[in-house]
Image 1 (cartoon, helix red, strand yellow):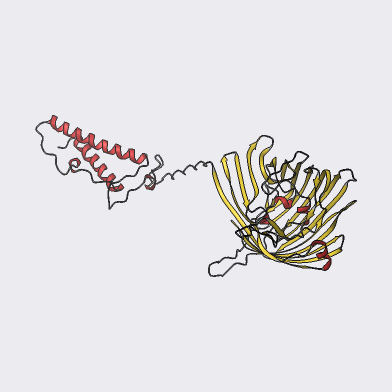
Image 2 (cartoon, one colour):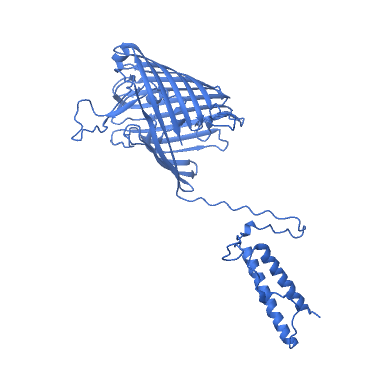
Length: 512
């Protein structure tokens, strides 16, 4: 007759064999397997001791298997060549006890990995341009003979990221602009600051104007309007803060900065040279139809108050197109190597231009309006500049532009609600293969703009200028586009009086 201890040893042996067979572990050693009737032992005491030892060994192996499974360690032979170890996460889920063995608990979702600091993301873009100019005699008399040409209007590389959960940074260099390379944006910021929101220190685009806030990668024309170079502060070194409300319907920003700066952010002088700028935007409504079409309205206003470096200031602008080259003056000796290392910039000159004159203070006030309804949009800005001359009457300059666009392929001009600026265009059907259906059309946009500046007042005769621009954009995808612009630039300035220049330009842009 088999005693209860015999039955226990047989049952434990069976469990171990089944567990190891199921999970691909090495066979149970033969000395633990009960392969037949128990041989008669000389005494009951000896038999009981043998069974106890066998039961203890089996229990020890079962406990070891359970521990390895619970810890998620692989189970299986340590050096097996023909058996693939299995991780605990690959095993069947454990049954939910109390509700039947047919129901199983789903595996627990892995915890998200905490962010690592510092981190970095590399970005960049280039713009390859070709421009052709046609001038009448009066325009040549006013601004000189402008040369056709091709160049890289911008070629930029940037690194952005965070060094802590509340400290961000951005460093961007331009290899196509004056200076080669040139500092564009170089700043660090602290986020989640009570009351102020986000505090930034360094060089960046100061808060003034919709065109300034919108990245040049997303500008619909080859260049910003006549107002941009004339009245907007753009990049300067300083400090400021910005934030957005919880509903993302309002943004606000304010900064103080050096009025002047070179191509590397530097500015030294001890007579004036400080400015302050601020911007406020509001979205009366914003409707996202989730099919790359939007309906919204943007309103904004901004100010720029400053004292110029050494009480000298200048207002001027190019005709919404630029092409240039760097070199040394013709006929000069570049050195014994005879290699012309870039030292001066030749390119499209300013048209309307006051020249440098004495200024105590200036105050610019700007307004912004953008209305987007599906594929159609209208955008306008106006700026009024009050200039306090040194020892002379105050001056009043002004400028404005109006532009419209239409997407034949149905897209809308996108909007960054946190920045109060235009954003990237992504075609509904990019110019890529769509299975056996050929290529999508990409996004096609037609544009028109009229812009005007008046830089003549009292003793300053900088001239008046009006540009009419027609454009066509083809967005192959969200990161590649071709742009075609035709510009009629009309300048009225002494000594030649009214004049005209016609400009055609094409650009390819890739950003990443």
